[in-house]
Amino acid sequence: MTDSYDAIVVGAGPAGSAAAYVMAQNKMSVALLERGQYPGSKTMFGGTIFREPMEQLVPAFWQEAPLERPVVTDMLWFMDHDSAVNVGFTGLRYAKEPYNKFTCQRSLFDQWLANKAVQAGAELRTSTLVKGLLYDQGVLGRKNKRRVTGVVLDNGEQLAADVVILAEGVNAYLTKEAGLRSNIPPHAMTFYVEEIFAMAPEKIEDRFQLEPGEGATIGMVGFPTAGGVGKGGLFTYNEHVALIVGGYVNHLVNQGHSPYELLQRTKAHPLVRRMLSGAKTVQYKAQMIPKGGYTFIPKLYLGGLLVTGDAAVMISGRRGTDLAALTGLYAAETAVLAKAKGDFSARTMANYMRKVNNSFFMKDIKGAKNSLTYYKEHPDSDFLIAGLFNDVAYEFFKVEMSTEKEKKDKIMRIISDKQMPLKTARDLYEGYQHWGAY
Amino acid sequence: MAQFNSEEDPLRFLQINQDNRSHISIKDEQKCREKCDNKPCTFICPSEVFNWDWEEEEISFKYQRCIECGVCAIACPQANIFLEYPRGGYGVQYKY
Image (tube, rainbow over all chains, first blue to last red; front, side, top):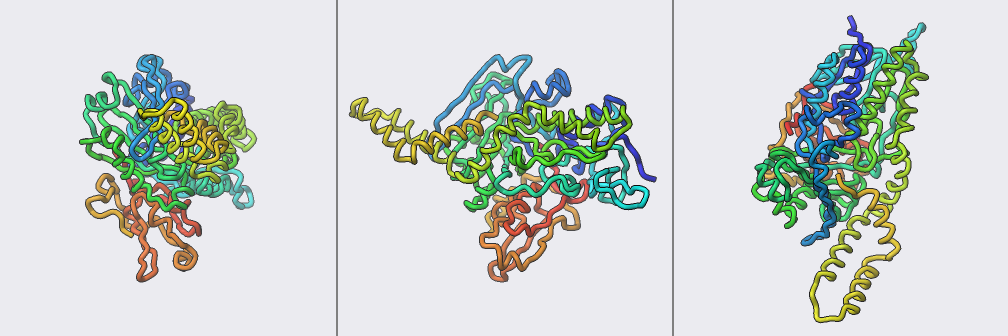
C-alpha cells in the first residue's frame, strides 16, 4: 500500500516549509519530508531574516518566531592585517516595528516554520531521506521522465503525490536526477564555514555598542579570505556571536586555502579577537551557497514537479533565505491552482516559472550575471581594494612634518602604485554590487 | 597533511550520528594518483574527511567525519568523488 498525498515536499528548510504551510492552509494533503532528525539540523546560516519578504508568508512573524535581535547596525570592515577601514550605518528606527531584519539561528527558525506547516495540517516526517523520484509508467509501462508521480525513500518505501516540490538545498541530487540541473562549476559556487560562540548578552551589547535587545552585523572584506574574493562576517545573537568566513570555491582551490584555516586566521586578527575574547565555541558548521546566477538557473518544473530555494539556485547577492521562502510560496500557489484545475501537467506547472521570472529578485539575478565572470578572472579584486583603502587611510590619518600638497601627492602615488587606477575603479564598481551588509 | 590535531579538531563542536555504511566513495583511485596534482579534497573539506598518503600514494577517507556540505565533489578537478546523503536521521545534527 503506497501512501498518497496531494503534495510531497522534499526538505523542511525555508522553501519547503513555506510551500507545505501554504498548501496545507489551502486544504491540500501534504507530506513534508526532512532527512535530519529535526528541521534545521542540517543547515548553516550566516545572515539575517528580512522582515518584508518573510511577512508575505506569515504576517507579523516576529511576534511568534524564534528570532535573535532586530539589526540596527550594519558595518563593513575593509581589513588589512593590522587595520580596518570601517563603513557603517546605525538606524534606531530599525529597532522597532515594523523592523527591517533580524539575526536568527536557522536551526531554531526552521523548526518553527515547519511547525507552522504542521499546525496548518501538513504531515512532517523527519529522519526521512528521499532517494529518488517516481515517474509515470503510462499504459505501456514505459517510464515517462517528464511526469513525476511520487518519491522513493531510503528504506524503499514509495509515496505517491500529484505534485512533488523539491526544496532539497544546494546539493540538489534529485533536481539533477530529474535532468533539470547540471553540475555547477566551482567558480559559480561559494563555500562558508562558521563558528558559533557563547557570550553573555551584556558583553555582546558592550562590544557592539548596542542597547539591550538590539543587534548588529559586521561584514569583512579583504583579510579573511587571504587573496580570494569572499567575506567574513560577525553576527550578534541573543547569547551567541557567529563568525563566518568563506568565498568562491575556485579561489579557495586554486590558492590552496583550507576554509577552516581561514576561519582560525580571521579569529586571530587583532580586531576580531577583541570582539570574541573570552567567548567559548559551541558549534562549527559548513555550507555551500550556489552563486550561479542566471546562467545556472535550471528549468524549474516538469509535469508534477517544482524546484525551489537553493536547489533552484535562487540566490541574489546576499539574499537566499527570503528567496527560498518566496519561491516556496510561489510553488505552493501553483500547486493550489493545479489542484483546483485538476491538472498537474507541465503546462500548469509552468505557471510557477512565470511567477519566478516576473519577481523582483529575478531582475536582480539577471542584472548581475557578469559579476561571476569578473570574479573568475580577477580573484584578487577584494584583496587589492581592502589593501588600498588601508594604505590610504594609514597615510591620511598620519600626522607628519609635511605640507598638505605633499601629503595629497603621496596618497595619489599610493593609489597609482597599487594597480592601474582603472582596474581599481572597476573593482570598486563590482565590489559595490557584492559587498553591502548582510 | 593532518592539520587538525586532537585539541584543534573542530569535530568536538559537532554532533554526528554516525551511520555504519559509507555515503562517500572514490570513483577511480587511479585518477587521484595520476591526474590530480594538489588534491583539493584534502584541504577544502571543512572537517578533514580526506587524507592523501604520500608513502602509499593512496587516497583514504573517513565518511564518519563528513558534515554533508558537498564541497569536495565540486572542488575535485576530476569529478572523482561520489557523494550522497547519509540515510535519514544519520550524519550531522546541528544544535545552533
